[in-house]
Image (cartoon, rainbow, N blue to C red; front, side, top):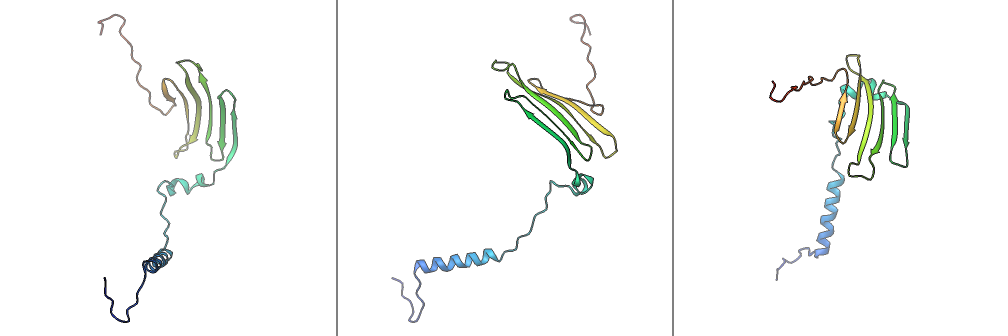
Length: 145
C-alpha cells in the first residue's frame, strides 16, 4: 500500500482521467490551424483567364443500352466531345469503345486538337502536333531485307 503524507490530496483514477481529458481538450483547442498550400493548383495556370472560365454549353445523353454522347465548350476555348458504346455485347469479344476529340488553345496561341479512340486495342490519339511513328514497309518476300 502506498503511504501518502498527511494533508496530501488524494485523487481517484476517475478524477485523474477527468483532469487529463480536460488538459488534452484545452491543448487541442488552443492549437492554431494553418492552411496548407495546394500543390495541385499552380498559380501560373489557375490565376489567369483559366480561373474565371465558365461552361458555355454542355450535353450528356446516356442511353439504356449503356451507350452515351457528351460534349462541352468553355469560355476559354476548350471543347470536347465523346461517344461511347459496348462493342459485341454478351460475347467473349465484348469491349467498351470510346471515341472523341478535344481541343484547347496552348500558351503559344495555337489551337491544338486531339482525336482519339479507346477500345480493345488500347488508346490511340492523333493530332497535328503529336509525332507519329515512321511507316514500316515489310519485305515482299521472306528473307528479303
